[in-house]
Amino acid sequence: LPDIDVEHPQDITRFPDGFAPYLRDPRSLARPWAVPGTPGFEHRVGGLEKQDGSGNVSYDPENHDFMVRIRAEKVQRIAHDCPPCELFGDEEGDLAVVGWGGTYGSLRSAVIAARARGHHVSHVHVRHMFPFPASFPAQLARFKRVLVCELNLGQLRSMIRAQYLVDAEGLNKVQGRPFRESEVLSKIEGMLKEMAS
Image (cartoon, rainbow, N blue to C red; front, side, top):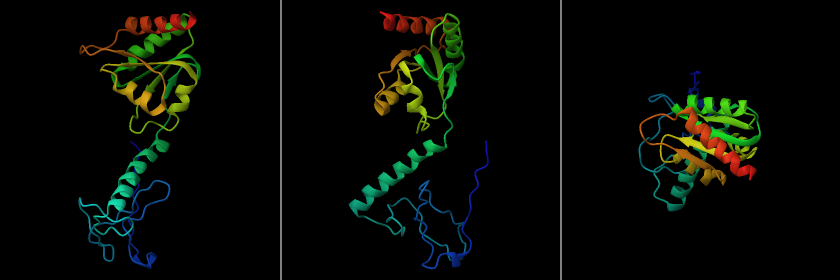
């Protein structure tokens, strides 16, 4: 994994109004991390809601609403640092077969087999789910249909449908066994046959 550099503020003279531990970086919304015990950088930490900016304990409902929303936005901004989902095949086509985790091998094999039969099918493998990579909705939009294959009851498909209003169809299996290539290929060909009719 790449190193994550953290710059700890150490020169209190750079803060003429005093250290403000709850001011946020405008791009990432991250706050500065001061090493505990650094002279001049002492501040309150803990589980109680803090006032925006100052870090003072706050029981104000509007501040609480704002802080909940800003923390949610901070998480969503991580999407811009996530690499695009891995795409095998053409960048657009009739069908995107989407999967994550241990479905990789069987989905890739089924897509290779479908492409060998002349179908315009691609495999999109998701590695970041919350948030999804910023480029993910554009990847999905370039396909006429989306098939989400999961070894569960369809949680990823539900997230895709809810966040992007994509009419994704699911292939789900919860038997404690992986997909077989033939299962996925059969579903691919069934969907493509529906499209052709």
